Length: 110
Length: 118
Image (cartoon, rainbow over all chains, first blue to last red):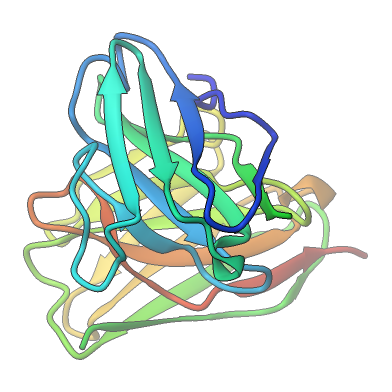
């Protein structure tokens, strides 16, 4: 199985919105509603931001939202803040009981 | 609050076996799925495999021939062994817990750096 496809980098100014895509196949992203998103700051462990495509854990700001269409999931961050600058990874369950990460997207807040 | 802590040698020689243990505190290891994930320097996350508290496992096909994940419920620990390592196995290794039902990762260890070098 290949890694899920994410853009290498995205950027936006404070207050703007950005969307990060995560493209897989019908055997993973498209086949199940088990996509989650993780934020990783340098030198830190990843942190869960979105699960089950579009649900937010308690404590995660509602500026973060997730969605899915066919084989592509998306993470949208609205009202960008400086502390949102980080790497973001999608993660999906796949057929045959395996899991896949996306290649990661570096978000730069200009 | 569940906490996970990785432990093991930070330096492993090429062709030898990398061995790490994840100790779970603040909660039971029973009735959950647990996983190992790694991140080479400057690169993305890679799923290595998972284990259920009963001992059932599944591994990343790209690593399957070299990986063994085991669990010791009496110690609230699970472990990773990766044999025949090369420099490409140099990475930060994380252990993490799957939610229940097991569809996302809700708790992570802080990660441990393992360098493969002679």
